[in-house]
Length: 141
Image 1 (cartoon, helix red, strand yellow):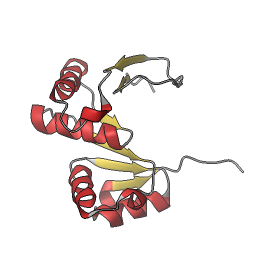
Image 2 (cartoon, rainbow, N blue to C red):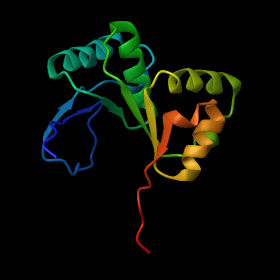
Image 3 (tube, rainbow, N blue to C red):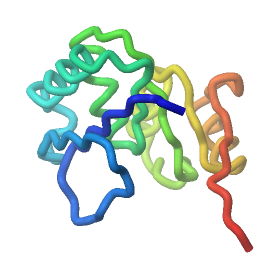
């Protein structure tokens, strides 16, 4: 559809990504994801240079990273979160619930990979249904 895409990875991994465009590796230490001001600045600088219409965060660590970067460095690009799990399975303490609810409320929209995941996300984080869409990943039987 002639969209320009920049893929940004927090770390390098061993998987070969099925993407032929530009991939930028930030090489950030995941253990510092809650206090990685230098990394959040890197992301902010990339956003300033690339000027994307949206930022898609694909998992929990990227959501934390993107939200903190946006809050501290005040960029305006909306964050779209891809929810690929039944999030309630990961919430085992009240602090986790409160922290993840805070993160979930910072995004412009959530795309869930199934209707079950969408419903679970809305219920767990008390998010309005207008902010969460299901786009099934599709499995051929």
